[in-house]
Image 1 (cartoon, rainbow, N blue to C red):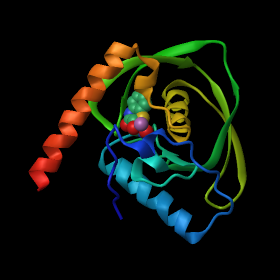
Image 2: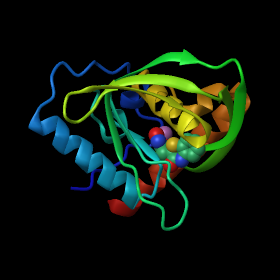
Image 3: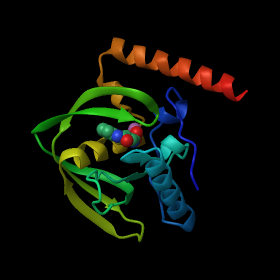
Image 4: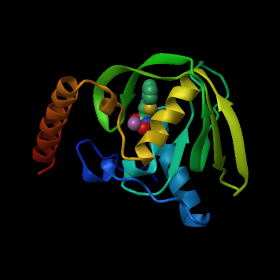
Length: 174
Ligand code: GNR
Ligand code: NI
């Protein structure tokens, strides 16, 4: 089932999310819903707070080559164990901040540990777009958005645009 994606500014996007204590069918269903919502958007990642659930769960699939096999990943309680000194800069966007893009510099490689949908611990080194995306998603679990890396004036301009967008959408649906 597709879920509604919250748009910034929203207090739920600023919260530190709680660890998932134990996997349940409900949580697996949530992960499936998030993947469906992400692919539909379309996006390459989605964090639970973006659909209003304040739990440490993210999904991602950064395979972008046409015709390549998809790789849907659901990560419960993801943690960055190590990050490279080397950085890379990507033009980032966010499904909670529609149509706004900005360059963000982050570690180029990160080692991530997480619990998979079967409850098994996993560990993997991510590079390239995967590394950027997994860091962007884990930031969401700590109430952090990519615009928080921008200069205050730029961030303020984007936030004002989003307030306007939300007001227009609320009026359109009223
Ligand atoms: O779809 C998304 N694209 C993207 C591009 C560059 C860096 C990060 C991302 S994640 C974003 C989806 C999203 O908002 N995830 O939280
Ligand atoms: Ni995002």
